[in-house]
Image (cartoon, rainbow, N blue to C red):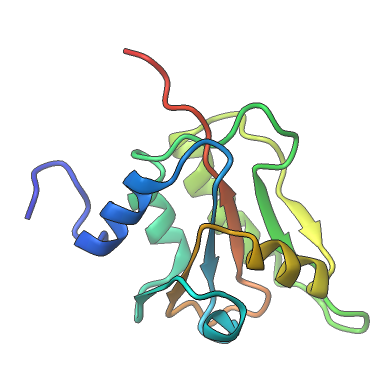
Length: 144
């Protein structure tokens, strides 16, 4: 255990967050996401939901302030509906750590998959909410 670092963050996830550079993206994938077929770098956080992981990751991770969309989620497929509570939970965690962060961009399903293919890594979670995937773009850590 490390003092001041959430026990939700595995040593592998901490190392991965450290290796990411400005502009790199991390996919926080729900339990249904095809992470292993989309990406070669996949970490597991089975049993953990995304909102608590955001509370653990965001104190250590600056969102990219140089792009309009450092946050992205999958848009619903035509005929499906979104549960607004999912984004509300994510947004609450984001605002706790990075107040005023831009709105979450919604990407069409296959556009989301394409963006995920270009990510630094995929973190498979235990999130079961439909359309619960979230992409974070890493920014520059502020000095001091």
